[in-house]
Length: 203
Image (cartoon, rainbow, N blue to C red; front, side, top):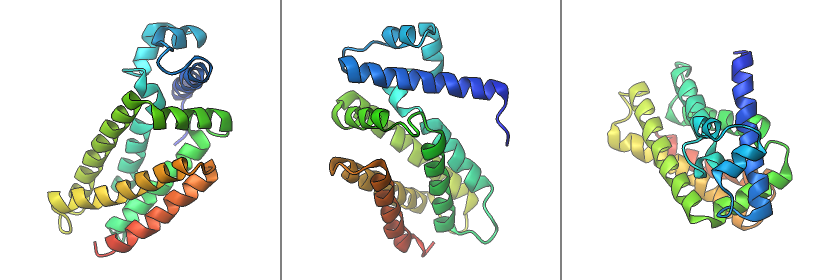
């Protein structure tokens, strides 16, 4: 689906706010940076910031909602022959492709380093990220349950999603702690997907 002018403008504003925030975090620290400073540096109203992000923590987790939408589209558009494992794999590939090509830090290694440093060291951001992860898992489990009512029940749907997303999240975190490059982190997450899929093929 082709992006409309309004959608493109919103995406550009969102990316501007994210990149501006990350640069300020790098220059003066996360705790020392205020929402008002981010908005002023990006030359938008503070109200505009809150139209895009409910909290300062959310500026670092800007893609979560889009990832959920992408995953939902994959589940809804699954092929008749696709099983649970195939749907999860396709959703993962869609999300990773979007992150690498259209994410707010796509192609900017310096911003990516700042992002990773803040996410790994700021408790408030880690807590918000964990909350969003649980929300995403709950939503995806619900979508899979509706898509595969003959194969999944609420418990198995939650377990399947937890296994898959937990593997990706844990591998990505371990790769960051090891100081791997962005390419290395993606490769590590790809490996975790292969491991998780071995257990999911039974579905």
